[in-house]
Length: 116
Image (tube, rainbow, N blue to C red; front, top):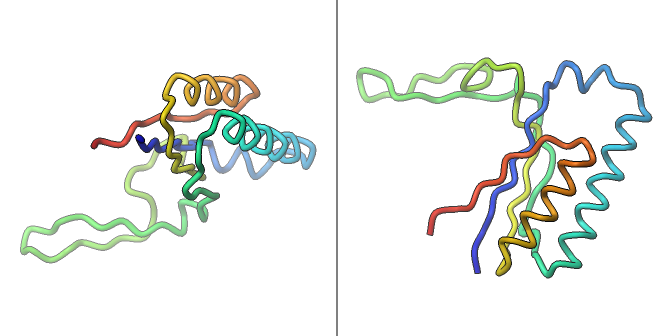
């Protein structure tokens, strides 16, 4: 059994300005993704949305062995991680296919197998 991390990057500022109909479309897409995962025998161990990146705290090693703590995301990019799924599966090919269908409905995802 392997575990996979499905990261959900999105431009937060653009997402916040979309009309309610687009947010509803996204929720339906996630619902269909959950159905596809269940039908394929994949287990969602955990997942969910993340607070805005403006609420993040970054921690880096300092020169003196003490962490440097700053408000905000680790890096400033056009897209931020807005959510994730941690999935357990025995069938990577079927899981990839479910993820491809999810992406095909307009979702941007990053598919990562966890190192064993």
